[in-house]
Length: 107
Image (cartoon, rainbow, N blue to C red; front, side, top):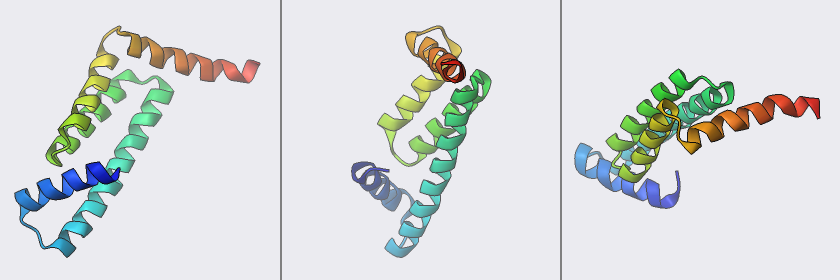
């Protein structure tokens, strides 16, 4: 997480959970590790062109980020899920990038 996002999450969680600063740091580290895993799973789903998994992982990220008070980032995750459900340019872009990756071994 960037410093700005970390600051937003820290302030939000401090108010919501009323944790001691030491416990808050520990909790944020665990949450950051979980977010990293979720992002890796989403990235893998995009690489595999598994749009059902993209929708699931994007929704998980949306909820996780929202629970941290990171509303803007939650909306981005929501848009990823919506793009995977529709035929928007971003959806087509994901398909194109996957195709390009698969074909790169031929060049």
